[in-house]
Every structure is written in C-alpha cells, then in structure tokens.
Length: 470
Image (cartoon, rainbow, N blue to C red; front, top):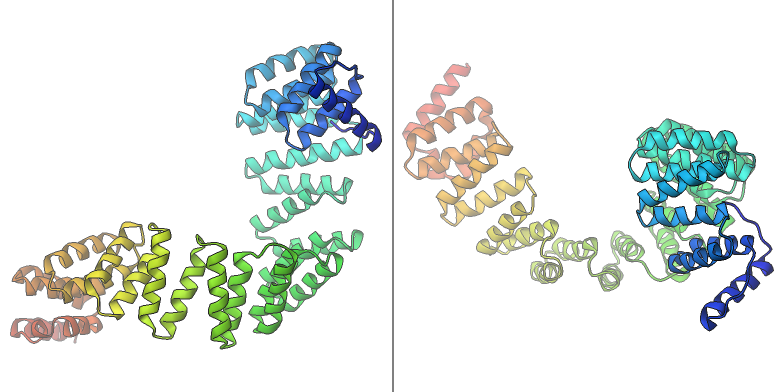
C-alpha cells in the first residue's frame, strides 16, 4: 500500500498518536491518518505499535478495508496464516477487485512455499493495477517468487520491468545482477549495466556492480575505472574503495591499495577485512613490521576471524619462527577449538618442531573435523610410522583407502607396514599392487622402510615386475 502524505501532516498525526498512548486519552483520527501511522511503524519495524494503531483504528473505523488489510499483514508477519486467510476471504467478498487482497493472498501462498500459486495470484493483482508505483512493487514481488523457484530468467525479466518503472529501485538492480551472475551471463550484465548508466549516470551502485562484472571477466583496468566512477558519484561509498583496493592488489599496486583500504577505515568503524588486506599489502612490500602490526589489529577487531590468526601464523612460519607460529595458532585454537584450518596448521608446525605426538594429535583432530585431504591422511600416517605406532598407522591408512582407493602413496605405505609387522602375505599383495599402479612410487618404500626395501623377497618381486613390464 502506497501512501504519500505530507511530512508535516504525518509528523503531527504521529505526535498526537504517541501522546494519546502516554496519557491514555482517546483522540479521534481519520482512517487515512491511521493508515499512515501504521505504515510508518511497519516500515521502521515497530510491530507492537503498528498493532496498537490497527486496533485503535478499527475501533474508530470498523468497516475500513484498508485497516483490515493491515491486520492481515500483521497476521502474515506473525505466521497466523489461517486467521489471515479467513479475514482475506471476507475482504474479497467485500472488495473483489481490490488488488491488495490478492497481494496479501500471494504472501500467504509464499509463506506456505506455494510459490507458483503466489505468482498466479500476483499476476491477477497486476491486471487490476493502475499506478506505475504499484506495478513496480508487483514486478519486484514476482521477481522474488521466481527466485524462490530458481527461475532466474523469469526473475530477472520481472526485476528489469520493475527498474524500468522505478529507475532508483536499487534492490531490483542488485537482484538483476544476481540473476545475471547465477546464469553466468557476465557479458550480458555488463551490457545491461552500461545501458542503465546511460539513463542514470551518477548511480554509484551500478558503477560498483559494473566494476565487479569487469573483475569477473578479468578486465581489471575497466574495473578500476568503474570503481573510480562509483567513488566520484559517492565519495563515501565504502564498498567501492574496498573493491578498488582488491583490484589494485591484483595489479600489484600495493601502496595505492593500502591508501584505498585506509580510506574505508576513516569512513566507518574499522573492518577486519580492510585491516587484513592492509597487512597483506605491507607483507608483499616486505614491510614486515607494518604487516604484523595490521595482522594484530585484525584479530583485535575480530578475534573470531580465522583469516587473521592464519595470516599471523603463516607470517611467522615463512620466517621459520616456528615457536611464535605455534604460540599464535594455540591462541587461535583457544578461541575456536573446532576450526579445521587451525588444527592443520597446529599439526604442521609441531611436525617442523619435531613434536611428533602433538603433530599426530593435530592431524587426528583435523580428520575428525572433516578435512579428508590426502596429504592430511599421509602426514598423520608418516608420523605414526616414525613413532613406531605401526598398527595405528595401518588402521589409519585403511581408512584412507576408503577415500582414495588404488592410490600409490597409500598402497606402498601399507606394503611397508605389513612387512614391518610380519604380515608378509599382505605386504606382498600391496607391493605387487603398488608396482602395477605406478612403479615410480617405490621410493616411498625406500624412504620410509629402508630395511624392507632391501629384503631379498622384496627385490625378487620388483625384479619379476620389471621383467613382466619388459
């Protein structure tokens, strides 16, 4: 429902209404005043006050269909769909050509996940619609229903119709670009945005979205120009500075990237993303002091941001300062004990420090948290082998086989382990299998099990395999 009261009139009505609530006096308002008051409270999310206004409005204007439609809207918001539907049926009998009845009916269908019925109902409302503003709203609602059905082409077309009526509906603009991206139509998105900018050349949102599309198509200089136009259109547009900074990083123009990220820090509260990117830029400029300073600012701003802790840890890893790296990854784990990336780094650092028991614990936890990468399984198995935990290593590698069957790195390790644990038949089976899969990987046996690799029985199997291949 679209109302256009004068601002002074609306302010006066609100003041009188809120005064009435405070004093318990009862003032008379005409139905349009109540409509505007309710609309105001719904727009700012004060549902309780909107409900009070509806109740008082219906007490004074018991036959007002518009006020009853607001009651339906409240029922829908509160998920009281049966009450909403029942009241709508009454209103439909009273005003069968009221488009708002169909809009509210569509919202009920949507809440019930009956999106095609919602679309059919909105199309009826559209046929009844007389004003451009209302048509724009209906096209936007249709677009959303098509999105729920993953019908992105239909959604896009309806949002475009909405934007054609209301050139400044930036929500529709975002949704159009979203549809283009989902359909992987980046070139079409670029054409659409350039056409739109011909009609609305100072739209910072469109320039920003155009820049992002140029990034997708790897036209970085055009992207940079688009973000510059976005900033020219609105020099406080934080998103444009962030995206411009990211492009400047890709172009290795790190000092300029830092400048853009710093502007965002001045425009609003510091964000962990901007602080982290500044740190990365300083690191690439080999300014270690400033890099680590910004990494610390990142985790101070957002201790839950794993990228900040990982940046600090990897910074010290690259400097081979393993003890400091271990110190900071331990701090990160204390904050979030279920972060798989932390545990993998914890394991790798402990392995480099030759703290094998701790490294094994780290890899085990990494696997428990769902990191099933081959190198994680193999690293854990190699540590178990070095610790002499051969049975545990076999069990772990047999689990690995379930994820990576017929993998030479796994097969040769199992061959060596079965020979080591005096299970020669199994050792022979895995060795022959490994030689069939890839004889080049025999070095694994040589490195991890040198005594096994020189056994005469093993040498015979290798010799036989070579003769067969020749």
